[in-house]
Every structure is written in structure tokens, then in C-alpha cells.
Length: 149
Image (cartoon, rainbow, N blue to C red; front, top):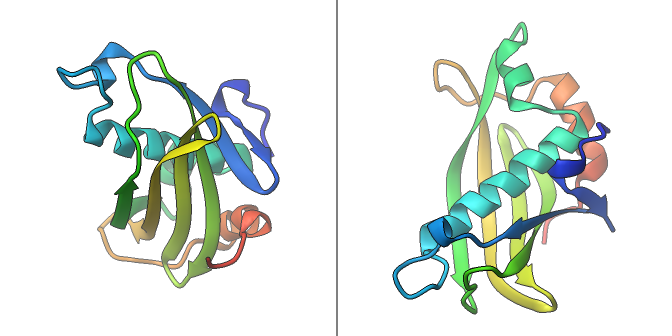
């Protein structure tokens, strides 16, 4: 695992990334715009991988350039977040099935869960075709898999 203090931390098998709501994240009412939750979730997934030792830039520079694309995302908006809120993005990598990574995420303010996401990301070749994650990537992610929900 890599030491990257701004990338959050792992606790109880899940990645936790603190985020603050800024003006740019909100709509004209001061509530977080729905698209901002998607960006928060992306940061959580990317920083979790980074702490596992799987950086996106390194994946692209390898002998078998690899990337991830989100093929499915299901969101449940439960409560609104507001400007200046301190939130925590929680990310659990659940399983690797062929080229797919199954991920559960949530965003909370204190004890209140504001939004939940079920995410399916697909590992791809740079030509866009799905591929199984290379063994080195798989070896870094597997210890963090929490099993399917």
C-alpha cells in the first residue's frame, strides 16, 4: 500500500475519503448538484486504487496499457448535502468477475448516509475492448475485496 495522505485511508476494509462541499458543487439552491455526487464517487474509487498501489497513470504506461470505464452505476439519493458540508466517501471493492470490478459506495455526513451507489467498472484494453485485469493489478486489489453484497 502507498502512503498518500490526501488520498484518504482504509478503515475496517473500506476506503474513506473526506470531501468538502464547495460552491462549484452546488446548484442555485445551495444543495449539492446530482452530478457532483458522481464526481465524489469517482474520487473515492480512484484514491482507493491509488492507496492499493494501482495508479491510473501507471496502468496506462505499462506494457499492456489498461484503463477502467464505468459500465453501470445505480444511485440512490437519500438526503441532500449542502455547501460547506464535510462529507466522507466510502468505497468497498466487492468482487472481480472477468473484466468487471463490482464496487459499493456511499457518501455520508456524520452518521447520515446521503447517497449510495452500486458501480460496475470494466477493465479495458486501450482499443476499448474488455479484458481481465492483468495479474499485477489483480494481486493489488484482491486483498481489499469485501465479497458481494
